[in-house]
Length: 42
Length: 305
Image (cartoon, rainbow over all chains, first blue to last red; front, side):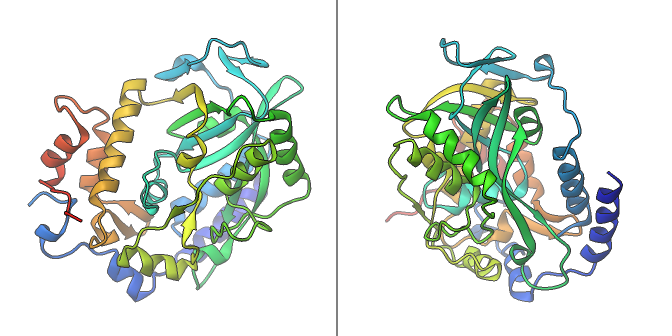
């Protein structure tokens, strides 16, 4: 388990450095107009 | 990759390496045997046999992605093969962990193989688990022999979900080939949706295969013999799957993935209204999931053509 903890700390530190590419991040934004969004009640 | 997800993955890996899990059926809202046969092992009342198919839905945001990825809806996102060994139930599954990475897609940083976990450990990770008996013509001894062989030869997990290349296997591909080793015809792969927003994400993840094998396609000729869920009753499981099917219906080619998911410091997340819709866990007082969705997510008419 101690090895797992060490890995967890390493992963936690490194994960903070990660950001999505701009084009992917853009797709993860909802559309501005609710009429084009089938998952949001106007 | 989120910090929380990383921690969860590492502790899951640690537990699968040796921590004991005690399963108490009374703690589950559904722990149902759906077959009168006795099976090879009585697992807390469930009739289990080597070579049965285990499918599941974790309830995680990325599990919903697996349900919506193909042109045909699938309620389950993961699959494995059951094996009874020395009186104990195990599941062979394709599984990977995400290793530290600084750039590039997370799929490049995924490492895994065909592994064996106890059925208790498998169930503990899932929101819903179902066990299916393959068709009577399938040689279940050959199915489980294939599964054990891929575990023993260290077959790697395929993070790019490429059905055309069997040198590495993803979870449902592994289960499909195991069933095929027992004589079941290979399933018809499902076309990945022609959704431009989804394509941007898949291109980044380097998932280029035009078709995938879904867990739903594996269960078509099989008979469900057990259903397990800690949080949901059997009726709520059906309502939950109907709600996911409605999300699949609404995810038309013009929809952005951002209408369903968001990206936060915790990684991929469901948007609050989607999470609330799925958490409703019951259609009541509505007749159908479409009616419920009209109330929660707004009216939607299926495009013609």
